[in-house]
Length: 382
Image (spheres, rainbow, N blue to C red):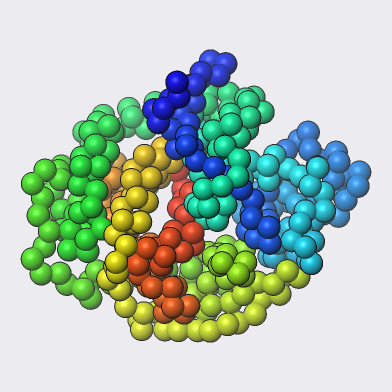
C-alpha cells in the first residue's frame, strides 16, 4: 500500500513522490499561467517547430540560453496561446515542459517530485490523481533524470566535502525535524526576529528552548521583509518580474524601481497595462488574521519537506563561501522566505484587498511559489 513516505524505484535511482500522494490536479480553463513560462524545446521536439513554425523557435534570454518558444511581443504569453480561448494551438505537439507543469522533478543526490503551488489547479482537490500523473512524467523523463543525477551527485559530493572541511556540516534530517517541531512558531513575527538574529550571531544555532523576542523592532523587520520581496521585483523587464494569476485569470505583474512599485496587468496580446502604483515604504508588514496562521504553517511544512528548498540553502552557503553553519543558514533562509511571503501578502492586500486570513495567505502563496521554485539551487530541475 502506498503512503506518504512512499519511494518508488525506477531504473537505478529512487524517486520520492511523497509531496504528490493523495493530491489531485486539474488544468483550470482560462488560466494560462504556465504559458507565461517560456519552455525549453528539447532536441527531439525542435523538428516539428522548425518545419512548421520556424520563426517561433528562438533562443531564450539569459546567461544560459536555450531553444524555446517565442513569446508575444517578447515578454507576453507563448505565441501558441490563443488570445480568445486561452487554449494551446499546438496542444498535441506542446513541449515536454508544458506537459510536466505543475510538476517539477528536482534532482539533487536523489530525485524528488514537487508541485508548483502557483497553479490554481493544485488547490481545488479535483481532477486527475497527482501520483499517477507524476509517475508517467518521471517515466518519460528517465534519460534526462539519469544524466542530471550523475552531474548533481558530483556537485553534492563536492558541496558536502566543502562543508566538512569548513566545519559547518550538520545533519539535514535533524534540522528539518527541529523546524517541524517548532512549525507554528515560525508564523510568529517575534519568533522570526529572534531566529534571524541568532542565525547571524550564534556559531551553531539551535531551536531547542528558543523563545520569541519580548519586543519586536517592527521597523527593522519590515525593512528585512521588503528587502527580501523587492529582490525579485526590482526589474523593468516583465519577463523577469513576479506574476500573480488571480481568480479572474488576470495576469498581474509587479515591477519595482527604487521606492515605487507598479502593479500592471499583462493582456493576451502581450500588452502591459498600468493598474496602480504605490510607494514600497507605504506598504506595512501586516499581521495575520483568522485562518492565516494555519495556511502559512502548512506552506512552511511544504517548504521544509522540499529538496529544492534545501538545495537553495546550499546554494547560499556556497555563494557565502561556507561561512555559516548549515543549521544557521537553513533557519535564516526559512525566516527570510516567510517574511518575503508575508510582505507579498500585505502588498496584495494593499492593492486588491485580499486580506491576511486564510484566503489572503492562499493567494500570496499562489503569487509566491513559482518564484520560490525558481530560486538558485545547487541541484537541477529536469
